[in-house]
Image (cartoon, rainbow, N blue to C red; front, side):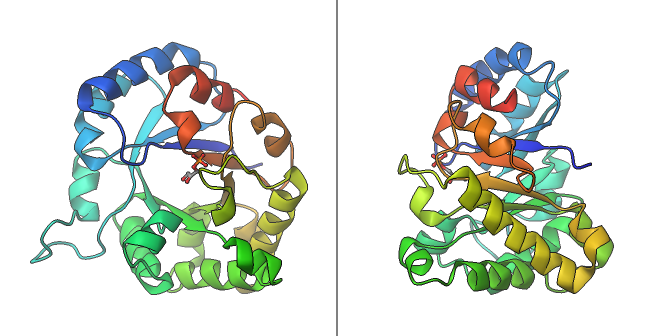
Length: 248
Ligand code: 13P
């Protein structure tokens, strides 16, 4: 019913030449993919990535964007600018941005609204820290982060967003949530969307798992009924690894 979506998050990695090389190697490996394939690259690499991805089903995204249309915001990029450069997806509220760059649930909401209104699909990241899971707050926190991010969207807009459930303790650590943990928490997120926007809307929203997802664990995670895809960090940097996740 929902088309799975596998997205790479390259984080702060690669030059334009390295991006071109990786995408050219990836293209033949994902020709038969049955899911949406996205690479979220550093904004500076969008041009090279778009050129290299030509003639394939690989979509290009970025890892952040500002919520204002234009103006005196030194160093920032607007949704309209990114859209004009061919960007189709934007990761919003990644835990690294929350941890190192002062991202809050409120700015995640502003960025998500700006993305949707400019025809960019936001990949909205939510996730609990280790001590929050151990304290038993995961479910209430995921409901709060998710519904705050969606605040002010119409039901039709909510249907278009992608949510990435990324437990912070699983990012870049080699620790993965178990298939059951990921499925259960994603189910909690979907139920919260259903309570506010109705089941028909919640059934459309694609919710990914992220956090040390790789060729070895992708099959098990993707077999879970609530998990509609993955947001892949380290394993998205090499064409062969990423293609194995895409072809889960
Ligand atoms: P890793 O796959 O490297 O754990 O990173 C996950 C992530 O942060 C994707 O956004």
